[in-house]
Length: 160
Image (cartoon, rainbow, N blue to C red; front, side, top):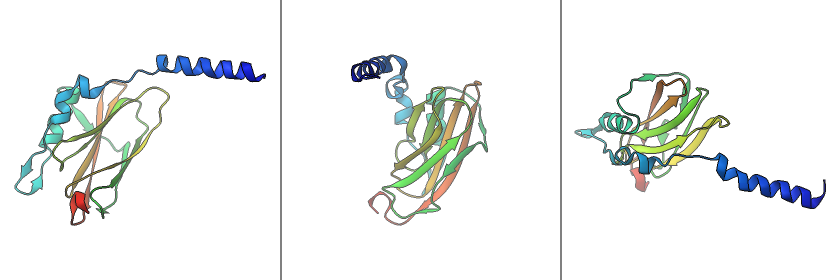
C-alpha cells in the first residue's frame, strides 16, 4: 500500500470517528443525581444518598442484586485519597454507574456503554472514611442490576 493511500484511509477513519461516538452528558441530563448528598445515622453512613442518586439517575426502577458484577477493592485502604476500585461484568449494558456512601455526593461516575465495549474498569476515588462502593448496571434487557462491596479506610481518610 502506498503511503498516500494509507494516510488517506487513516484520515477518513479519524474524520468518521466522531460521527460514530455518541455519549450522553449525564451531568447536564441528570444534574440532581450528581448533587445527591449521603446521609449518616450518627457516625455510620447509610445507603439513603446512594438510593436517592440511583432514583435521580434512572427513575423509580427496581434494582436487583447480581453476582455477575464483580467489584475488587482492598479490604483496608491505606490512603483514603486514592482508593483503587475495579469492576467488571459480562451483562450486556447501556450504562454503568458507580456510587459510594461516605463522601458528600453519592454518584462517582457514569459510563455510557456501546456494543463494542468490554466492561472491565479501574478508577481511584477519594473516601473520607470507611464505607461501601455500589455499581449499578442498566442492562440492554431493560433491567437494572447492582453489586456492593464495603471497605475500611485507615486513619487519615482523604488526607492519608
